[in-house]
Length: 88
Image (cartoon, rainbow, N blue to C red; front, top):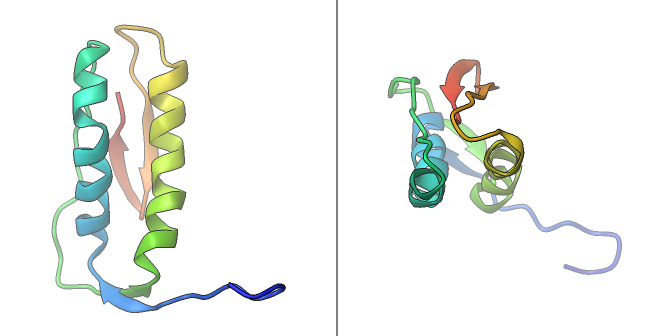
């Protein structure tokens, strides 16, 4: 990255794939805290051009916050790509 520039690599990806990557990243952490991450989005044939690294950074933040701030036994829901996704 040069000063003042952001390098973005766009590739067509399916939204459900991003969500599964986020889910698998935090599944063990949630389990150790007595919670779980449940995807509710279905796979589709829709592909969206995104920078995979950037979109994962954006999608992981709300899951991290849910794991950090939801009390044990609590539930956290959040919208993700137009679908309901249970974080906790």
